Amino acid sequence: MLTESVLLATIGGAVGWGLAVVTRNLLVQLMPQSMGQPGIANRIVTAEMDSWVLGFSVFASIATGILFGLAPAWHSSRAGTHPPLQGSGTTYTSGTRSQRLRSALIVGEFAVTLMLLVGAGLLLKSFVRLLNVDPGIAAKNVAILNLELPETRYSTDVQRVAFHDAVLDRISAIPGVHTAGTVGYGLPFGGGGIQGDFTIHGQPEPPPGITASKLVVSPNYFRALGIALRDGREFNERDTGSSEPVVIVSQSFARRFWPGQPALGQKINPGFRGTGWCSVVGVVGDVKQESLASDAPLTIYMPYSQGPSFLLTFMAIAVRTDADPSSMINAVRGQVQSVDPEIPVFGASSMEKLISKSVSEPRFNSVLLASFAGLAVILAAVGIYGVIAYSVTQRTHEIGIRMALGAGPHSMTTLIVGEGAVLALRGIAIGIVASLVLTRLIASFLFGVTATDPATFCGVSLLLTLVALAGCYVPARRAARVDPIVALRYE
Image (cartoon, rainbow, N blue to C red; front, side, top):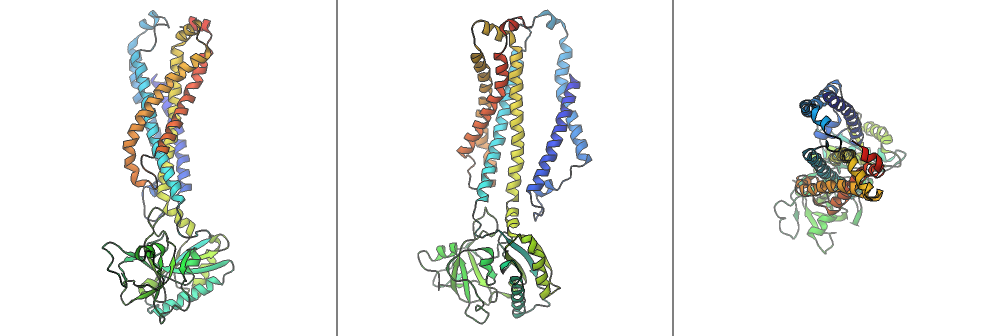
């Protein structure tokens, strides 16, 4: 018996190893290769499945088989042969204690499975809703590059603006490029801009804690990213350092500070040293700066020819193209370096990849917990099938008597399925109660879904009920086909 346990544990370990390799490869495909700051998801997907991991898995499987095989092996060795030979198969059946233990295991298995499924369902539903959030930009076919100007060679605003103007002109001339724009320290999903205080003409100081994201952008920046113009105009070439200071605000900014009033023509002091009152010339749609899950910040946009000089040193270039953005990266980099070959260009990517990177952790959590939940469903189905099948085998004589007394195949099928369904429903009920408490632990990971979402709980409960019925049906059908004469002779 101990040898059988070790053999089964080894086979299970081999299967588990294969599933682990498949799961790890799936995570590698789903997670972006560069995730910024290291985290648990990044460490897991970059871990290698080497010989040490394989050796530990084999050792753990064998140790588990020995540990759980010792008790039944010891019990069998003490039982002897006299009791079984003395009694017939009609009396030597498993005891009530063993039956209760098997039933308790099935109930616990279904309870744990339901908790995993509820957690996975909540995370998956949250992830789907997160992907459906409007980022405020049209991310398709937008290439992104970053560059930094050395202050020793570009020490004045005139030099920095001239460099960016020349770069944008050359990039816009590339075949397949619709338009190009730049932003300093505030690319969506790459940073939130400079957060700080501001002042609105004719209004009291904003309450403490109310700040705005301040961005300096070039003409055509809004077109390059597909940011909607709600009112007024965009920046143009006439917005220079010697012209009237102007700003563009986000829609949420306009609604908050001028509800029911036109924002155009209002005066704002962005709060930078040396900047005074600026006229609002446009209102654009809200843009998610940090992530899809975060609120769009109150945003003030300034022309880069009028913005603070320190914001012009680190700029991100957004290029809208006709084709795959990755195919345009080299051409864009070449045009930047044609203006100044010593300027480093780095962080080449696409806007779609930046958005995908921002949801990498929710994706990882959903896939990982869904994998565990899927395995738990399989184990629950196999478990209830095994228990019901074993019960049918032990009760063959009883089934023969019932059928001899007039019980039909349908009634026997209903009887066996009903017994299994009762065990599953008990486990589901316990799992629902436990889930109502434990899902609060993952509430901070959810977006647009409550930790007690009724649809998820109902759907998971229905799924497990169907799994239980399917697991019980096969042994129930086998019991219904038993020949009463053969069953009465069974020992």
